[in-house]
Length: 242
Image 1 (spheres, rainbow, N blue to C red):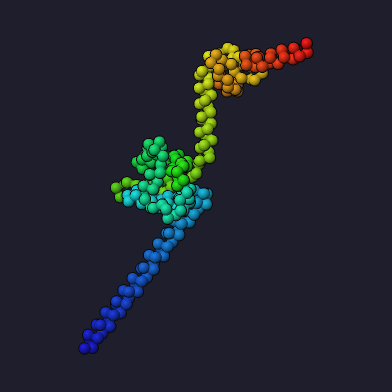
Image 2: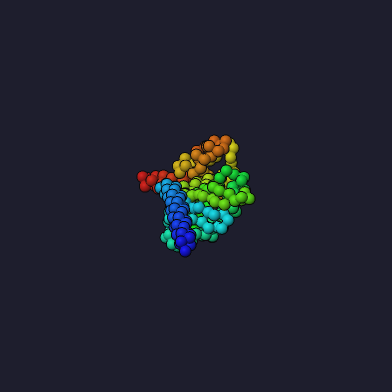
């Protein structure tokens, strides 16, 4: 009986030691996980301090962490966006998808050191917002395929609108020049209204553009419209004085 009792006590002590060992292991793992999570949050908060949205994509499961700022940028509350790749994918403007996937796949395939693309995303209010999307593969699978991709979204709507407006104006200027018959020699400029005259009535103030982009000189005279106005005024004044 004594031997059996000693054996039972030893078994109990071993079990207690094992339980304490498991508790220490759980504590260490919890602390490690907390530390890792704190580092991730610190990194995320640091990026969001620049008003950038943060995304963290598992390229295998297609789960994505979208930061609060990322969602706010598109007008959504935190609970209105799920943690899935489709939340971003379905909002990319149809005209931008080809370039987006070309740039993204180039990076995932190791052809570029990082991913970068400017594209439009659909907001909650139904309007599109321009974003600068940048990211980089941070870890890989054993077979060399991308596992974790981390990146940011920056709102570039104002800058992009100015850029597109400048492109539109430049296009209009070029089209106007293409319709002008004379690009070398003399261009008739009205000395009154300062507008270019041509046979089809292209009356645009293009002096600066033409001077910088062509070999044209300018001659000044009065256009027919201004001539009618001016001479009518002179004739009227002459009759009145008479």
